[in-house]
Length: 369
Image (cartoon, rainbow, N blue to C red; front, side):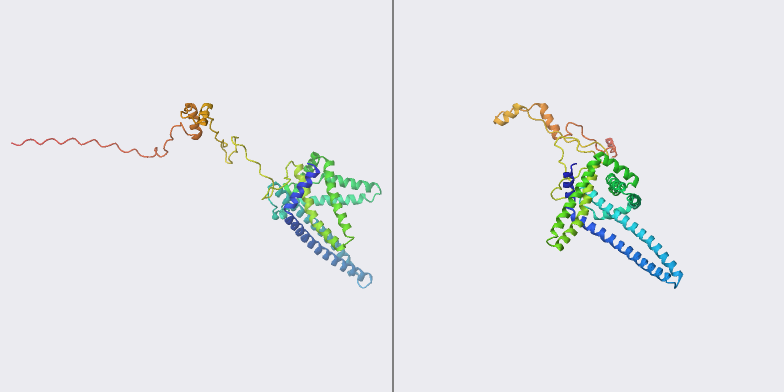
């Protein structure tokens, strides 16, 4: 699948359900944003209390307040880490649900199902493991960045390699319900099957396209900053769902599943393939088993002499051969020439009793004297 095909098919997936996809993105942003705001408010309040307690303790009024302030800082730090974990995992779960929405719609020839947005909670454990692995790698990369030159080169290269190799981990967990280990191995195999450089280049093209759009919007901001800000906000709202459609298209292509380039008129999804030609068998096997349906063959063509006589309108039309007449009858009635079926009720009916023998004639009266 070329990059142009990926853009075309991702555009179709995004265009036909743009309203639901943008609504899903807004719902995710609202839920995650509210939870993050609550966590930030709690942590900020506890830090304010702890700073005040330390200030009072250092003034010499009370040493117990100093201990309380330090303890509050520790609790605030723990709550901050836990809150960050909750918000990050929750965002990952919801984005997995958006992948489930798009993949289900593309695979089943239908519009998106908004309820799939919350389907990621069924794989909550796998998403937590994935986030913990990413968090651990991020901490190690941050420590490596301290090393001058080597760290600045090694970390971006490693990040590009790992991000491309694990590109399909999130869709695999959301779509197939795999564990993190299974998803990581499967994603690596899918990327190798398509080609690492091709996969990396396809992602780079998407990033370049987003960069060009943002650059154009920033240039428009020279004439009107308010108008540019509105356009930038709208682009950010729409770009997230498009990126999910883009990666979903790559995922389906790497898995060997076709995505329609255009949706058929009057419906969503892939066009229906044409039915088989007349006379082609079988049409299909019944789900409960049994022999597949074989269509009846067309009747044989009449002999040329018979056709010529009919075309010329000859009064004396020669009758067709007896073999052709029998073939026409067999084609019109598949049961022709077979013995009649026995009545299933005949065996269960009682035979009528035999008729009674006639009574003997009466003897003639003797003459009287």
